[in-house]
Length: 79
Image (cartoon, rainbow, N blue to C red):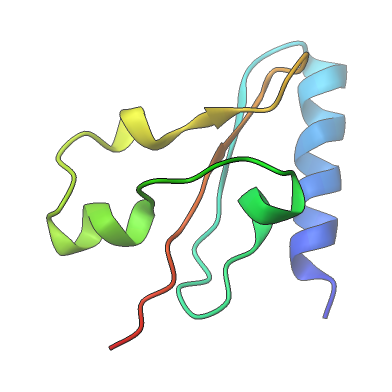
């Protein structure tokens, strides 16, 4: 428990300290929650890329406002 929270805070800290872009991929395909926790709207996610619905992985990134952090969200796979 707390893995997503820890990952998010570590990525945010690294983006501030390093001053470079940090990409955080939410690969929890059953209960991914990073985008929702940050209030980011998600139409497509990494699961869509893996299923072949989306061709451009880079287009899935959602920048967290006023930071160098980008979240690559997942969509929950139901089947």
